[in-house]
Length: 74
Image (cartoon, rainbow, N blue to C red; front, side, top):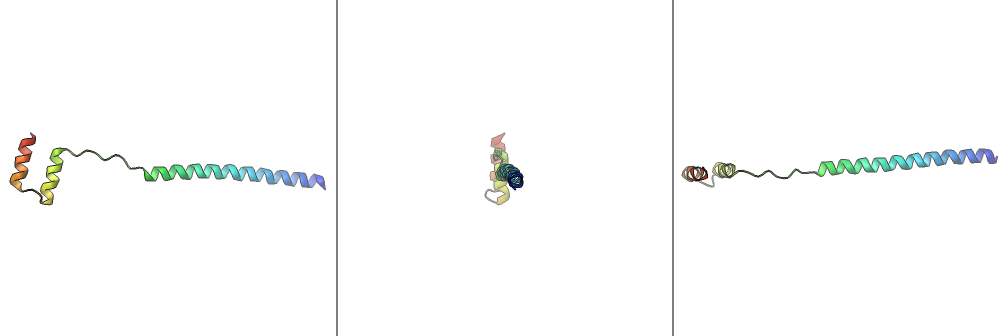
């Protein structure tokens, strides 16, 4: 009777540790994926010409203002 109890307890111990290791691995992988999804690359700097093109497209400046600013930029 003691012999059967010992081996039954041993199997339970193996299952417990395997489940615990699997849980730790799952938590690490899940956290890694969560960090990867939240990553946002740094915004790229717009050139001055891109800025005035955007302002012209939005109607914030006139064609004459755009041409003058473009000429000033080089």
